[in-house]
Length: 543
Image (cartoon, rainbow, N blue to C red; front, side, top):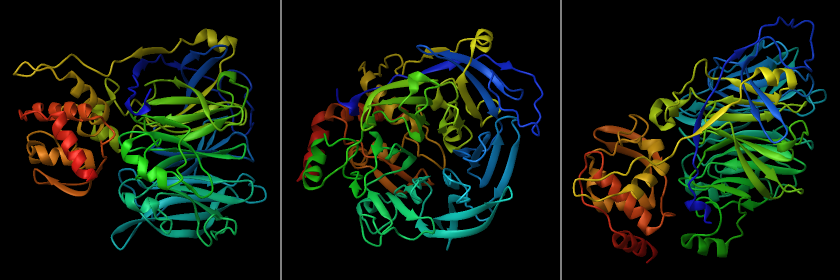
């Protein structure tokens, strides 16, 4: 089955709240080996094949957390960042949070601010912490990579090791991984300039590899260049496991990806999305060696942070990549082959239970922690997209713990309830009696996340489709949807700086259906679009 035309049905669950009361002293440094600690707010349990998982909230009322990182010196310390520019430590024994740093020069708005974060895997020998964040330069957006020393429980002596990275209001990445060989890997988005992703002399749309001091390793694939791989759109997940570097990447309107990052690898963007399996990709794939993903999702799920789960604590998840999904509002479990080079199966866990999941991490003891991203810009811009789940939820954003319940706790917790919510609604009949249910179904899967289900858009983020020139002009609409739109745009007197993807991967019939739906809906009452009109425009492009 063609993954680009798969429709993934998602659902909404409900949860039951349990509050456990017990006083635990920070000074006693109690290592919890039983069922709970006092500060945790238990939600429910989830039963797998042999495991019974308890789910609890360990931190709440956070401001848009982005990255989770486990301390390799103290096993009860979970580092986390917030996009506003804070670096924090959560004591998982007590629930106490300590803020180590508040950046003064971070530029924060929409989906940019403090992004990638990592601590060195051997803090005893190399007490370094690395931050990637956006800042303002000459009224423009740039980003930089800064190294801090961790000393006496604080972050000191900042040193910028990479700066003046082009940025924009979207697609800045990023994640950071430090290898045991003391190499920094950082994933960067295309910063809204897709054509630069194939330019190996530019830093955007790349995975970079650096020494700890910011210099370029001698064995990088391009001499004197930090570029390790290229052709990336917006990679937001990065993890190194068993010698393999995995990365999750946001697709455009199709083909979110899970990739294995190789030295000198070209991942295709913007000429190829996902696999080399579309007619318009054939020539580029023939002339270039493209590294195809080990997994792709269409419709997109917006995969964000990822973690490798190698523990046997939750045996159903052993040797899997855990994927936090923003748009898909779920935790994805990708079961890997023995050698880790292919995906053998996917499980969707906690579907619509927590909202948008920004990052996930595996603890040394096999517990899993994830953080939500429900106070970010997208739920504000399009709250209706998340169905009857009102985001942000109570006490968002949160860090959530998932662990084996044990018999006693498992008996006290209620089972998580999963309810499937169909993506399609009742068939819509227009004034002339024509049925366009296929067009509506496509619209809701590919367009509603931005333009809203009623076509009203989100002021300042996404333009409306209601009675606009761009919809009334049939040729312009066909051109925009097939080619995509990037850059400044004015609609009904309001300016937008947007990046609308190309939908050329859809069939001629699917394009005709969705364009007809848009032109007949939202008060537009315009004539439909035929398959022939779509085919003619595509033919003109090829010629």
